[in-house]
Length: 526
Image 1 (cartoon, rainbow, N blue to C red):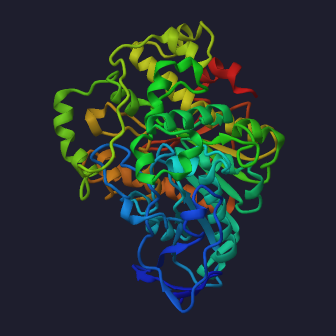
Image 2 (cartoon, one colour):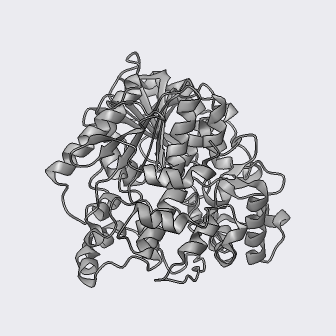
Image 3 (cartoon, rainbow, N blue to C red):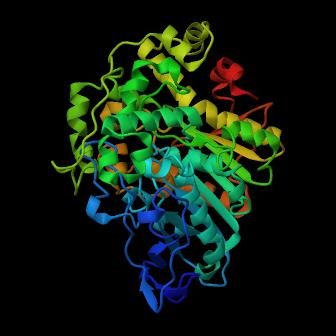
């Protein structure tokens, strides 16, 4: 295949890399700056001649998700962030399966230039791999009077439209596109299943650790008002605030959310941002929207990591790694921050003060909308766990595990084909305290075991032979699914709920979270 490919915007030139042709930083939409800021994405201006496509475009405005992690955006980088990247092993006539990755990051961080999301390993498995940027934080999901909601989703749809129109020139099959993503990326994929503007843009979907929080418009408006209050302005003035100033107060609403959790749809203070149920792009919570059969022609994988909430519980002081485990993990923690650190001039949002070390399971059940019997039901279902561990299980269910299962249930009930998995491989980081935590599946999925994220997940050690074998099997399953719709284990049904268990020795079991499903049945809406 030639290193020069003609796209709808003009010709681009990539680089050859170990059997692949790689193209980075191709615009799929105009920079969302000036009059286009807080608007739906507009087509990218075309260009004459051949445009170099050898470096990632700028990241969207964001702060590091955790202090000390790499800094991907600085104010001088500007807003020209809507770019796409392609790794391809094929030529213009090959029509290989296409896999499009959508990153997560709490809706407030993430960029396709993160080394964890490099597409080379999957592309070498015989697919055309695509990643792209979309707006995060207030730029992408904050409510601005007069502006469309869910601008980050509109960016995603524009990127998928670019794939539809251009991927054949890179050796991909535009009629065989699989979208996949983790956390906020998984929630994006779930919402796109029923988004009217996304119809026909993909054939299959893999939802990893869906972040199951979708806000009514009123709550998003309250968050915008709290943000404006922190800046000393009115909500109507938010559109004129510089990105770095919005970043400086992006977590300000979390204090109000933590102070009165019962007043919010999801009483959790991980992020101020979530998709808005606007009836246009997000028509409803995805597991409810799929009941209509709107996506029954799209094959689905939906799953989760087994211990989704442990890293957040550690942040709250509810789970405490031993001092020796923390010391042993220092090299891996340093690896997460290698290269770039937040400088002293960076805006720093106030931290939310939390009560740590204690939990009230009855209050937690009430905040989550569960019956008063839920704490006792959890104790019976998960005997021997401390209250802190039960709290962690409850939030793992509330935010990730149950929405993932509800999505598969709804899709299957409406006539679609679903497959479910539970990623149970435990990270050795922090002395094993994390278990199979949120994000632990990303290095296994994309095969990037030298990225900073992988260094943390693997506790700074080289991957074991068992881990490598599991990762190869998982990637082979994802690629087979992208090619044929069959990942290699039986479909999910309401009767047996067969689930792939991803561990060093993958297995299939029936309904591993049956107890949690029964506790949450009343709130599923199914």
